[in-house]
Length: 410
Picture 1 (cartoon, rainbow, N blue to C red):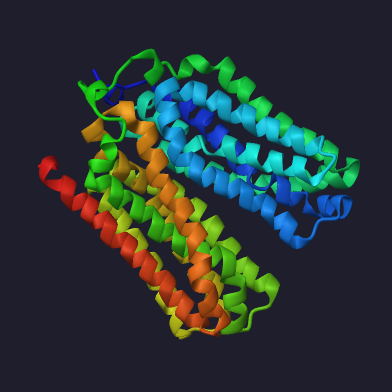
Picture 2 (spheres, rainbow, N blue to C red):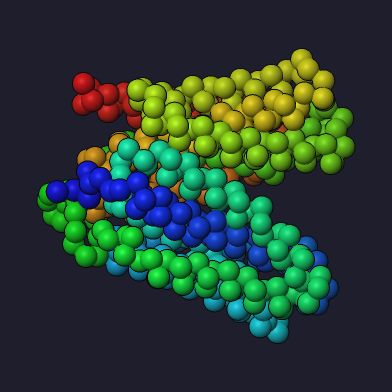
């Protein structure tokens, strides 16, 4: 019997969701550990902005390449062991940063953080698909998305507050304790994740006979990869250039423009909660919910690009866009599960999610390079149209995924 067909008690599912979500929050927390310390690290080590930025480049490049590869490792050793390894690497990265005596050690710390971060999507989605009732997966994916944002939000005040009081080394060591605390908790409650590929429990029949890269032959896997590529590319534009775009196109000051991006992120969290309920109670395909939600987001991008409304409405339109993106989140993850795991079984969950989520890293990495020259030329509203185009391409990929699966659902 496949583990993804099992049903667990409500209490078990809630605990499993809490454990996976806390680990995901920790991984996002570590995205910002090093940059939060830049005001202290740069003068202490005499770093330029380029040298400081290179630390984050090392982190994201390591994470991007590692994410696709780590899926194979997680499928081999099991997601629980992958989770333990990821948290240990994150803690080690902070210890190295806190003990650094020269720039090279900071670089090692950034690479260790990237290696630790790269396992979390393969690990988290494996654990959720194997150990949470299918009826509650929508809520699980929603909380997974929300707690990632919580990790981002908590890190800067935590790090800056401790560094201001006791120095950057103490702050880095305290950050290491965050990962160790989460690790201690998941070790304590490890029986919650009773099903693990390494233990040979569950999995589709015959999946052991499949090639290690059999998932690459499934068109839906590539469609899901490009869905992430397009939609994360749209977010990458807003994340990197949103405040500058709203300054030039609408005359907003830095605080107002940054507030619009904050409205997007907060609303995306609220939308994630709503998306979990949509996944559970709306009797339509998850791809259709994704398409409608991103259709709403694309419409808001077009309205922003037309400048029909004045600057007062920018945070409102960004909040509506974020709400649509948030609703799509958990339904997007269900769409991937239905389109891929149903064909390949749970034995390849980690490598599937690792590969398709690599599309997210690629999209966010390339979008600034493509849109930067457009903004340098002064075409700020065209950039917003480009965001709408990318979101629309995401809709088409989601619909294509659904069309491939719908005949089998009848």
